[in-house]
Structure formats: structure tokens, C-alpha cells
Amino acid sequence: NSGPNTNGSQFFICLEDVGLPHAYTIFGKVTEGMDAVDAIATTPLHGERPAEDAFIRSCDVSAG
Image 1: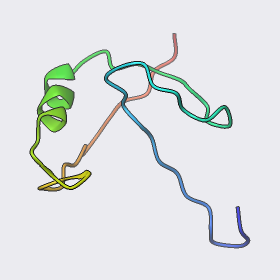
Image 2 (image 1 turned 90 degrees about the vertical axis):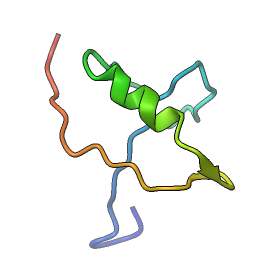
Image 3 (image 1 turned 30 degrees about the horizontal axis):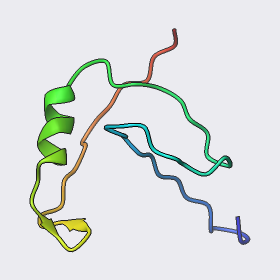
């Protein structure tokens, strides 16, 4: 947070164990739609970014 109107958020879907910084909160798992995640993961890259943008248009959050 750098002041008013500077907050943001992002999330990562990790396909393997990675060393995320300890300041990150790790939560959740993909319970449906892993085929979509796999499709995003196999998208050709342009440098370190996908050659085409990928969008997750909706998701559900559930407890338990």
C-alpha cells in the first residue's frame, strides 16, 4: 500500500511447487476446470509472457 487508491490484488495458479515469498498468503486449490488451467499453461510464450492474453472470466470461492 503506497497511499490512497494504490491497493491492488493478484493471484497465482501454480502448476508445481514454487518458492513464493513468505509475505504471500497461500490459499485455495483448483477443484474444477483444471483443463482450462492446463490450456493456459501450454499457451505459446513471447519472452516470459503468453503470446496471447488469457482470461479467467469467472471463479467461485467456497469454504471447506
